[in-house]
Amino acid sequence: MEFEMISCRDETKGLSGEWIHRDSCHQIEELSEFTPSSFDLREIVFIAKMPHARDGIELEYSPWFQFLLGVLQIEVEYSEHFKYVPHAQIELEVRMGYREHASKKNDWKELATSNVTRILECTIAEEDKKDGGTYNCDMLDLFELGSSSYPFYLVNIRIPIDQHACQYNPKNPNCQIGKLSGLRLIEIHQNGGFTLVWLWTKTLMTPIVGACLWWYYNRINQLARNPLLLERAILYLGLSLAILDFPIEWISLTHRLPFLLLVSDLRQGLFYTVLFSFWLIFAGEHLIDDTTRNNINSYRFNLSFIIIASGALLIYDLIERGVQLYDPFYSVWSSPTGSQIAYVAIFISAICTVAYFGFLLFKIVRVWTTIKHKRSAQLYQTSENRRLKVESVIYRFKFLMLFTVLCAGFTILAYFMKQYGEAQLHGDEARSGFLTGSTSAFFTGTFGMCNIYVLILLAMYAPSHKHYRGATQLIDENDDEIIDDPSNQHTESNAMTTFLKPSTD
Image 1: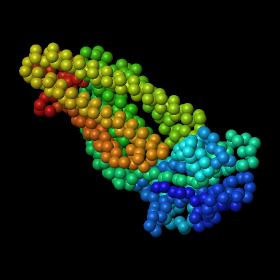
Image 2: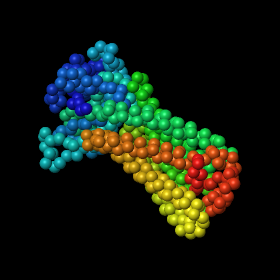
Image 3: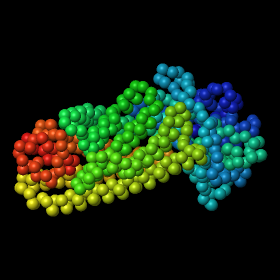
Image 4: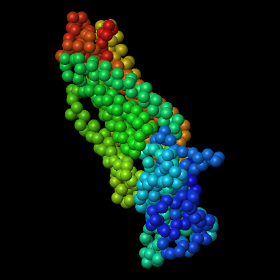
């Protein structure tokens, strides 16, 4: 929704504490023709009621929208007297109120108030450098609410320009922003229909994942031996997916949960961390000739990339989302220190991500080559029964590895599309951003694919509880005793041959 903010005159300059709305607004028709009563321009207040009426019907926000994001468009005219200086600092006094259904029409309650500082970046073509020409200014982040709890909102914005102080120090805030002609507020929220599909998908998947996870836990808990590293990794991956799937968003439809965006980011970050860690362990545990398998310490260097990248993004998210819990107008990019922290966090995570996926690709190629050599060297030198079983292992492993690569590709693509789409929502292309298009189907599909992937892992890597329940030792697949000795009912294969189960299982 776009709002052309109305400019009003407030003789009290905000000292009265009264809300300025349409019914109390002394509207200023043209800012360029307005003569202030003093050097302090706080008597000009820009107002916007959200949402606006449409076709005579008063619209309202719904909790199904999940969040509200506001960006501000500053409209600047070219002027020889009031010149715009690049990288000008603009300071806004912002006050946001809300109204509930039971409240009177103009009974607004304060939600948040803050002094906001941003950097105004504008450009203008040479042919427009004349009176009446307009600058093309970048959008400014204004607010972000983690929940859409109230039906109506009111925004009051003042731009405190002290013309007397600007004469002594032109670098003061608002002294170099040029000649303002108006403000435009753009509000963005999540589509309610997408929220409905998303919540029902989570609601349907939660009991399924929970039941499969409980079944898998019972399987490995019934074994006489300790669980293998790969089995524990799959268990933790299932737990992280169950946490991600839990539809806590249903509570936000009846209760105000401003921390919901932070919780969602933390749950998603936990799942990505465990998933990326699992992929390294999954590839490493299938290196047949590697003697360091089944030992988490052998993956310390590999997992360090994931821990560093996750830690950097966690710090960034806690700063951004954490502060917004009590100050929705805060942006980590609004200050030089915050911008440096954000850039460092993103830079570190990007380097670690590239290094991680390069190493993961190397691991997958190495596993593929090792299995190919093992198959050509040993597959047809043993009995026919063993050949069929080992071939079944290889085919199923190839299927899972290809599914892993496919899942990794779509997961990475969905993550970067989400990040780029959110950047567009904060930029000048809000309407053409990924998150405002049809890509919600892609996000939902990727979410479902990750659930199916984890469910397949839980089903196919669950150890046998019938023939190998009392197993206390691990024998490599090269040992024909697994197949050739029918009386051997107390051994179990290692991670590579977890699939070697009797047909009666």
